[in-house]
Image 1 (spheres, one colour):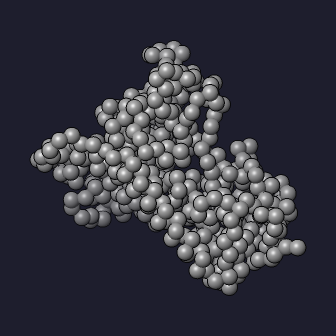
Image 2 (cartoon, rainbow, N blue to C red):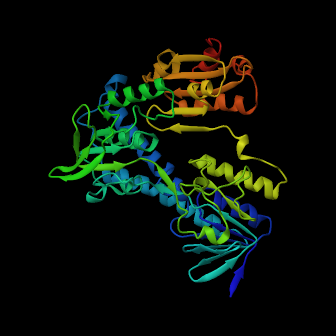
Image 3 (cartoon, rainbow, N blue to C red):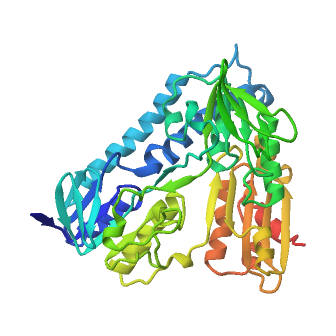
Length: 456
């Protein structure tokens, strides 16, 4: 015995519920299968709780700087970690409950709790029941990688999920991994009051960025008292009387660092190993990501993969765009494609890094002849007025076509200002269009046309 639906959605992250809503509104019957929490990474262990924590950490940081603004506070600045954690948990729970209400109100849609496993091209099993549908959409997300470092199984470590449950302040947090997730937690916990060391195997932080961006990020973090150890080729772990001893470097500097707690932030992997994909003829790559085409179709007819599990992006906005692409193709006769979108993302340290398009390094490697515009945030009126002048702007332009190839804004409101550049790129306009546009003063965005007027 089995039950038939018009569509099955496996996983209720960012893309899944929205797609279920479009399909049910079109009169189709839909089964949404979720084995744990609605909302996926963003709601439960990603954007929403972490950016709530970032906001609390920033409040503590600004309070400590109050005298710089002529504001006098009495006594020491203290952080109530149980309250900080409760605030983030509340944000998550409200979003999760909102999703449950939304899905529950979809006509013809049924939410099923449990693990889905493919037993055929158009058939899955969940809780001992078989469900069939001509269209199946996989939106199962990803989780933190645990590398096989020597001794990693001999100590207790935290990842981006378990650290959200902390209601105490680590005495010394050692963050293994100097990229986006690790650096956000590193600055956050330093501002809460912990000693923090970042251990990165590579020669510099956030290695996908241009070298000067990496160096500026390092300066910001070190300026707040965070110790950064790059070139850590001998990462290992063993118990210590004071916590955990982390092996760092075999060549120079102190060979180990002892922390009370260790956060592993060295990458993500897709949640695809237990789906029985082979039974449906769904191919994956060597890392377990589901192989999809430009419209997110898998190698199995009638099966699509959306979100982090397809390797086409690791962000909430890429997952949401995946939903838009699939819905447009299936329901709107609009042939949208993954290759149409421009890569864009942010690093939410404070000040944030907003990025879009290609780095200068990538542009040159691709054969572009480039012109570069830069400006330190110390020459941006908004930054000076706010007393936050760290970082800089950088725009990369194709010297032959005048097309903007990419940009980085590391500085106050950089995650918002970057959209001015992104939108110009999406409109396929030359840099001169943006350069000649009048912006509001005083803002961060108003300096982008100035930067474009000084290309070199």
